[in-house]
Image 1 (cartoon, rainbow, N blue to C red):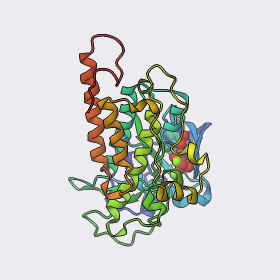
Image 2 (cartoon, rainbow, N blue to C red):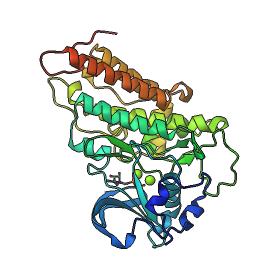
Image 3 (cartoon, rainbow, N blue to C red):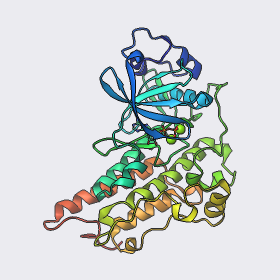
Image 4 (spheres, rainbow, N blue to C red):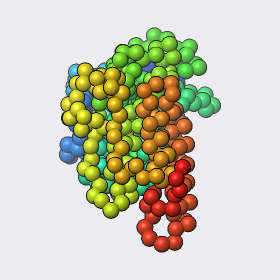
Length: 358
Ligand code: ADP
Ligand code: MG
Ligand code: MG
């Protein structure tokens, strides 16, 4: 068999496999037999693939089909999923891949609620759920950005490069995972002895225009410290995810109806913004999503939440929080919530209640 078996993925890899090695790895006693794969229903479409709910020997899975012209995207996504030590609670779970057919495919765990964008379009969330969702995404990103060494295994730091609410998936318990590593990039890190990566992609100007950081829009990505620069670009987009999510949080709109879901900048640039429109808005005018009127409330939780978003989408890339730091900020908010919750003996908890001005 030429496909990459599931067992194979669970950690027997040498650290420096190239995408081609991965593709050509024979793994005859794989526990996954793709002959038993059935595609059942189209559940999503992205820029590069169509995603189906499928059945693999009785197990419900998601199958991402890439068109033949997107083989590079497929190869890159497989390469990232095949990195050692990549398994994490907040990273989408890869099962297997098949590159033999004209349409290469990736089989992964099925996330029944689909993308975060789909979920938030249909549902509002309470403060605790919203915080947990955002914290999960942040943990996933922070883990992705981290270089790890364990025994003889090495996980390089990875930049995602296409953080959007369509590339985050939602489990049935409403926890979130980071997905779609088609544009992701291994970062040089401290073990940068490797060279001749055959699938190096253009460093700048990739991703989804709506979520592009000002320095990407300006073509001024700091390539001297490419590692931090690419992480900072991810964190900018993460801030937009926070904004999209908390705008659907019931507890942040006490006594009024929660506004409909909106993608970041949807009001400003609509559904199909051009690169130039985003340049004007985000780079030149330094515009950021507006906080709803009710968030002017002087609660310390709301204040820290807004501050965290602002610190993540800062115009100055180097001033942005790291994903690790954003994770700590959200953890503090979660602790504050638990604390408030315990101390409130009456009524439904909401972030406006029981908190003092900063
Ligand atoms: P692309 O690289 O083409 O953007 P994605 O991996 O982002 O493809 O998937 C496209 C869409 O398909 C996602 O936005 C999501 O709605 C849906 N999707 C992808 N993977 C899954 C999955 N494992 N479970 C459920 N839905 C998924
Ligand atoms: Mg996608
Ligand atoms: Mg993709």
